[in-house]
Amino acid sequence: MTGRDLTEYRRKRRAGSTPEPIPTAPPADTVDGHRFVVQEHHARALHWDFRLERDGVLVSWAVPKGIPQDTRRNHLAVQTEDHPLEYLDFHGTIAAGEYGGGTVSIWDRGTYQLEEWSDREVKVVLNGDRTQGRFVLIHTGGKNWIMHRMDAPAHPDWQPPRRVAPMLATPGSLPPASQDRQWAFEVKWDGVRAICEIDGGRITLWSRNDRDITVSYPEVRGLGAQLGTTQAVLDGELAVLDQDQRSSFSRLQPRMHVASAAEARRLADQDPVVYLIFDLLYLDGRWLLELSYSDRRQLLDGLELEGAHWRTPPVLRGGGAAALRGSQRRGQEGIVAKRRASRYLPGRRSPDWVKIKNIRTQEVVVGGWRPGQGRRDGTIGSLLLGLPSEKGLRYIGNVGTGFTEDTLADLMTRLRKLSRRTSPFADAVPKVIAREAHWVSPRLVGEVRFTEWTGDGRLRHPSWRGLRPDKQVSEIRPEG
Image (tube, rainbow, N blue to C red; front, top):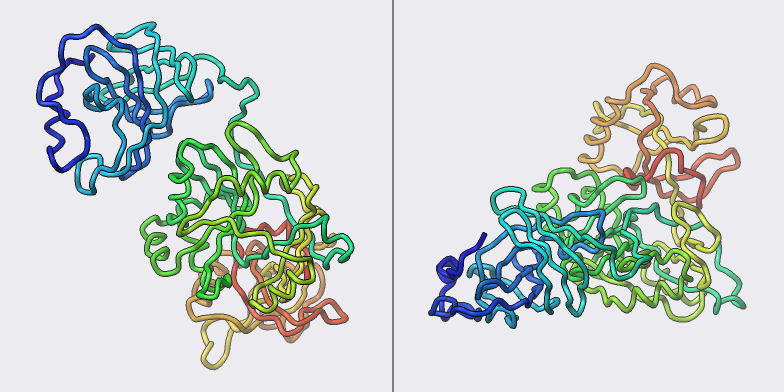
């Protein structure tokens, strides 16, 4: 399976340009040792190098997702060149441009017992500081192997991470000041809610309506590298922040529909997001949903998640009234009050979380449009809006302001695909509006800013804020 020749190792490295050991002599005849090392390697792509002492060298594999902790999931392992035994102790930074450029640290090391070694599979029992148990490497072709855990993890109650639906807040007002000690207060960010699953240094971002949106936000991927082999499920908000740390929904809008990796990278350079993390739902094999908010928050703070495109914003100081005044002064959307004793309820809207807004907004369903006039001739003049009710879609007015030319072009493309002959509204639309209306199937969800509700249930002075692809029609309800 492997020889004792380090020629390939030396060929790929330049003495004096790398801190790695580069022995000049071939491996000496030696009695087989049984040491192993796992090195965390932050190179072009994060991976873990798994090395077993054999025939005077370290037989090596690059494992992109690290040592598997679950018997139900196998990890790819790509065999690399043999390394010298001196690499058992190597850690440091390999300069950019050199082979394997990046930071190398020792993640685990120890000894192993050999059960089988052949060209087809290698079976070992690892006894390290962080890793114990029986593992097998199975050759699948070329340089590719899979690494499989054969026995149960050291912690029998270990559970794998998975995506969950986010817990939702109830619109309301501040809890009584006499209860301030029972509540924590956070900024309400004006962005896109996202659950982040982190496994093997890789992240997956899930929207509220269970869409994988990872490709749209490439700048957040470094969060996985920071956590390394730590497995976690986080809850937070993706937002574009201005120089005063206010979230800008209008600048986030172009990022929300992107499916092209190249386009996502271009937009990330133009208007980068920050993933604002406010809850920890799972950590290293343990679900935390039954813990109190305070306990989850303490564990989250302990992870010290801080980077250019992710952070854990602090809980606001003082009581609810002070927190709300501060958010008003900073021009933020509002605050969220969270009961300190509350557990996490996936997919449920709970009075244990209360959102208090400084501005009035409403999620709406688009049921049609009217053509524009003057400078808007040939495009959309206004959108006809509705809210789901027991009797069907209820008409709540129309919105004709807040659009850019790009927004109108995008909406026209989307609405033409949803065209229908009859009104989707369950109640009557005013005749002067209905005469000009182009009806559409009610599938698009958007958001408007408005001043108040009229006596007959219409929006007063609405202004378009943008589409909400992260929301479903079935979950839209009156707010504000």
